[in-house]
Image (cartoon, rainbow, N blue to C red; front, side, top):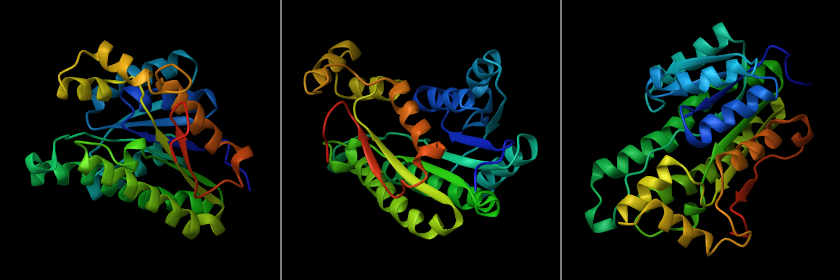
Length: 253
């Protein structure tokens, strides 16, 4: 089967950065897009950009780590835009610190958003996909899944998403649903700017240092990830499932 012409896509954490770029790309691919973020008002710029390009979008405020809010977000998108047949689990937070300084709250908050949030959103959205016989779930992992100093919580969550991806691919494949993951390398966003601040560097110096170890010789952009999401979501990727692709300007794993 193929996707419904009225189908919608949901992108979590899409008020800015990678999520916003992904929402805009999926809108240009013909999806109505549920722009989901913690603060609905913060979604306005992404929604306006999509509508200015002739697309349809809906701002939805939700804490994806809360079961009721996650379900309500999916239901609202289904009611107002059409059944969601694409889900991009992009919402994330960082609470970086060395292990001996990391609090339990720092650990739990990262696990809750990345892992619990992806679980709750996927559980809510899969019903629409399996009923349609077609669906796409894309989870945002990270090269930090391979280990990164000062990110025990984030690295663990991103590695967990890779196992989550492969398991869902096995469970949902027979229903026409593919599940894949993208592991970005260094992407210039507000989140990486926050990391630069944590280590006491200017963002420009931080970017220069990162570029020095990237084979293609440039920083990643949110659009690089959005383009990869677009591939996974397309009909041409129907035989690709359970995969993790490192979009990092060079080999990582």
